[in-house]
Length: 230
Image (cartoon, rainbow, N blue to C red):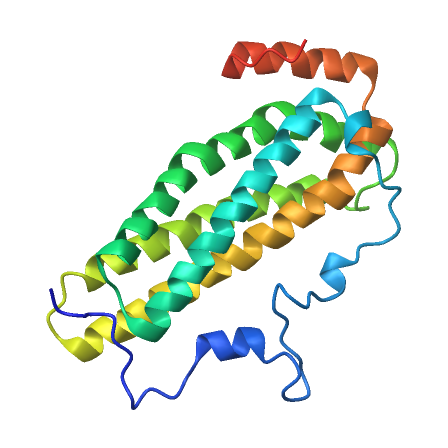
């Protein structure tokens, strides 16, 4: 099989360099290894894991599994960027997209159908919202992240698939570079999204949600997802 992902020498743009060389130029670009202020949110009281409701604990455990998959996906993309595609790397791509379809999508559904409506209401009740005619909370941003996740995932998967059918090497390389860029954007988005949920939104849920709210969450998790939290 031809190496359709081989890097062309004449290509000067390097997306990976833009992610890693954070200190070059007047406007630094940050990598996950040296995160910006987005990873240092306003003071929020940390909540010990064991004090959280079982549903929040479940979501945070799923986050840990997702972060492991993101690390492996990112490494695979960087390997493809440097050395091209092969059977093993192609299999790893498939593994990640299966995880995205089967696990991440389900995780997002749990949040959107069960948890987010409660948090959204309680944040508005406690003034943790915008002042517009339709008050927005952090939940609106998180739901937007869910949409962007699927957009980045779909683009990465589709572009890789199209590239595998092209016969022109330069077209192959250009399309795969674009796919890698979208894939790395997906990694960055989900890492920050998970950080915001674990360190800002979930502590706010612990602070504001009532016993009645958690009773409703328990019922809905059983009804919608056959998960018994009792």
